[in-house]
Image (cartoon, rainbow, N blue to C red; front, side):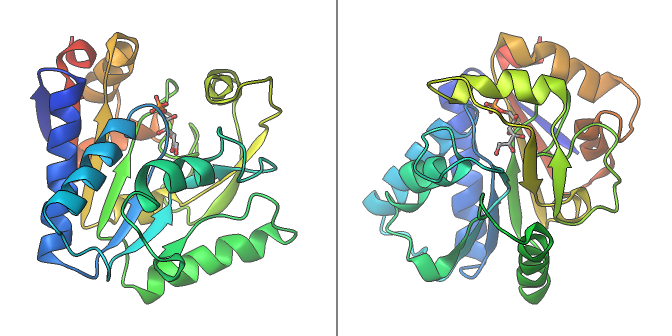
Length: 238
Ligand code: F6R
């Protein structure tokens, strides 16, 4: 894993947007697995701006969501669906045929997992995964203790995720379960970009870098991966 420390959130986000553009320019048919949340918001805004300004061809790439809260409507501004549409897909004029998001109301949750697994397999794996890191070290909704062999699955969200996750919603939400691309699939990405910014992530980054490498703190697993880049700002690196 490489560690890149950037001055601040703006620099970090610009560097992340660059990395995504490099990936798409090298492989115009790239499969991109994208997180939501506070961390990547500016990255997506800068990415969309550059794609439009520089006429970068994103018409052949394919976008998948890293995860979703089960039972949260796609119209809800706290949903991963809404976030990806708002900051990434709509601004870049990505066609619906280039996107696969999770259905938060899937009647058959196993089938929803299976269709994501098949899609990832059919495309030969993920080319670039952009992930944040949770306060409990989760990657996507791969919570502490998740098997490194896991494929897309339904996760029972741990208390930290349920509590911290309230920040995305305008009113109190019941968020007990999520659906997520699995650790095995994320860790097999050709390029894994993990981002963290701000003071509150400093203890998480410190444990990620210096603690045991274990699925009890999934983010620590990226240290094993030569193709992983951990990008942080100075506040998160302290
Ligand atoms: C969201 C996701 C989560 C977040 C993580 C950090 O799609 O996969 O794992 O990346 O909880 O969230 P923020 O960026 O809001 O600090």
